[in-house]
Image (cartoon, rainbow, N blue to C red):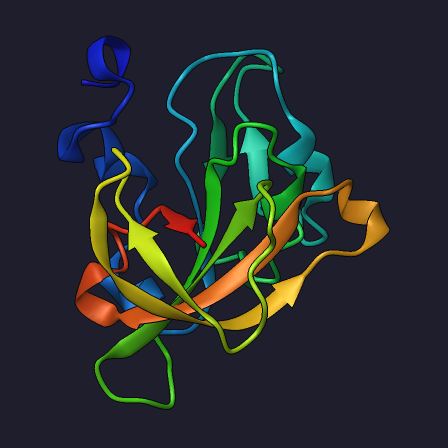
Length: 161
């Protein structure tokens, strides 16, 4: 339970996960923001207005999965590092990509390998870095895209260089 352990349960994540049909269509955001806190930079970051706050700034962001293009503009804007882009359409069978915020040093290099970790920091597998985006506008929050086994896409939420 998130409130007791800091790690959300599958039940708590159920409502933020895109349906399988949407995952099959290409990249889509997953917003694992599960607490009502005053925060909304993801709303203004979304160029297609797929993210909304139902009851104001202290509500949880709601993602319209069908509107989301998976562009990733919201990922580096989230101060809680709680937004990920999942892409199940990958050229290698059985693999997928996951884009996530990364604010530690050293920043991994493209084509390097990193440890893929679960929400508790436990090692799950090795992952190949396929892209790193870190422009000044991201304010030292790099967005790292890794290639991972498709069956682990909902478990991996961090990396270790």
